[in-house]
Image 1 (cartoon, rainbow over the protein chains, first blue to last red):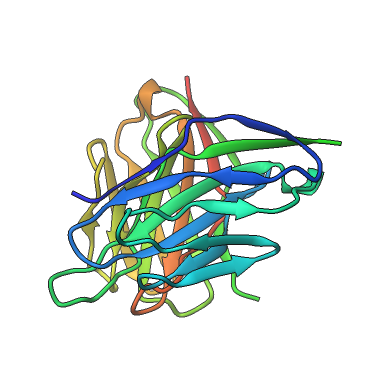
Image 2: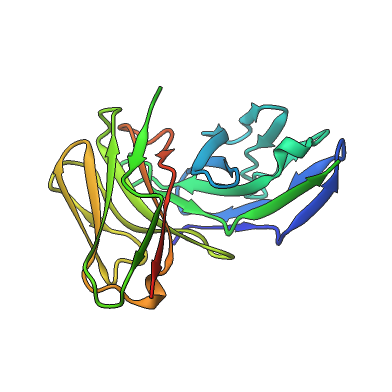
Length: 117
Length: 112
C-alpha cells in the first residue's frame, strides 16, 4: 500500500536558520501531496499542497516541490521563527482506480520542530 | 469559517466501558474520517465514511465501530475500551474530490 516516510526528529534550530524536513513517499497511482502543521494543543492545519508532478506548494514562507522522479516532497523554509515551533506531517491522498480521491490521507510519522530565539 | 467540532477535548474512561466520540462538521462535506495519533506513528486511519450510512474500514479498525446517521455527524465507538486505546483521536472531513481535509481539535482519551 501507499506509505510516507519523514526524516527522524526532533529538529531544533535557532531563529532565522534554514529548515529542511525530508519526506519521501510510495504510491501506486498519482497522489496529491500535503504538508500539515499541528501547533501545541491544536488539531492539524493544512500548510501547503501539490496535486501533480513539478507543482510547488507554498504558504507562510514554506515551500515544497512534488518530485515524481525522486518520489519526494521536502519541506523548506529560508528563515524560521519561534512561532514555527510545531509538529509537521507529510501526507498523501490516495486515489481509486477511477482516479477519485475521497480525501483519505496516509501520513508520515511527524517531525517535531523547536525553534529557539 | 469552516469548522469540525469534536465533542470533548479530554476524556478519562475505565477499561471495559463503551465510549462514544462525536464529531460534527458544518461544511456539508460528504467525506468524514477518524484518525488516531500516537507519538512516532503519525496519524493512522481507523474508519471513514463517504456518505450517510456508509462506512469503510481504515488501517486499524479493530476494537472500533462508527456511525453516520446524518451527513454532518460522524461518531466513533469503542465497544469495550482498553488501555491500548489511550490516544489522541482526530476527526476530519473533506469535500468530494478530497482536495483538502479539515481537522477537529482532537480528543485526548485516557483509558484507566
